[in-house]
Length: 97
Image (tube, rainbow, N blue to C red):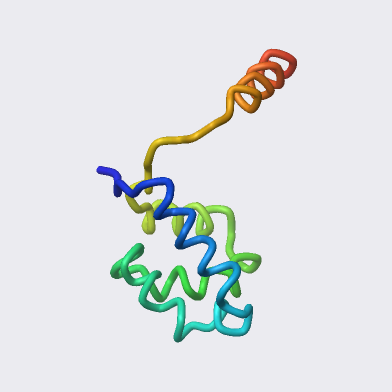
């Protein structure tokens, strides 16, 4: 099951987080708790602590975090310019598999 959002909504949220909030707020646990809670539910604490401890995890522990915290993808229509699509196809054909 996917979470459906419009492209414009997704870009608006990204813009607000990146441009309106100074890094000291954007990186604050107080500010990010609600969005993380909405996205990760019961795994909020684990995801909020992940960046600080990721390099100390074994490969199995690291993979386990991704398995436990998998969330439905946020999907919406993709708006690619025809030149972008052509460039992607050229890159894919030049570097197969």
